Image (tube, rainbow, N blue to C red; front, side):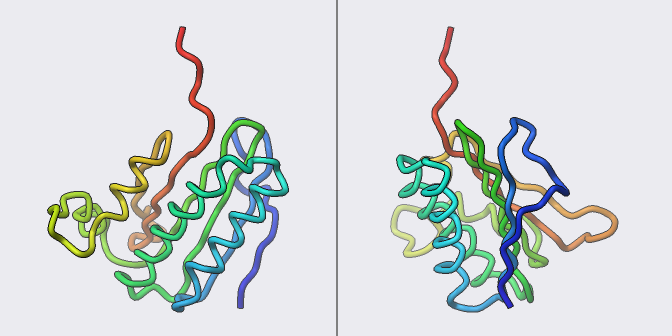
Length: 150
């Protein structure tokens, strides 16, 4: 079952709207998440962010699908006038294994996804689980116009 609903549980600190999508961990999860984020950006008039967002969300959901045994993949998107932040959460393996992909060598066939996210995003990061959900991990990225420097 796939569900997309606006949420007021975790409001966007900069204003705007927040949405959640819960997906079964299947081979179609990256495509569904990509279409979900694309739709949000098109409706919110962030057309310039669509291509980068599609790449980043595809990488994160694909990692959750391929490298974890999680039953569900959760996508949270917070959209405001200037930025979008997307978080992909799963109940999979520890963060250390996921972050090892940043150290992939130039000849490696896999392992460049997080480096790609790092190159496209204004910011990105990870969060580990808490005492209620110790196995949960989340990887997030923010896209948008950089703040002007003074």
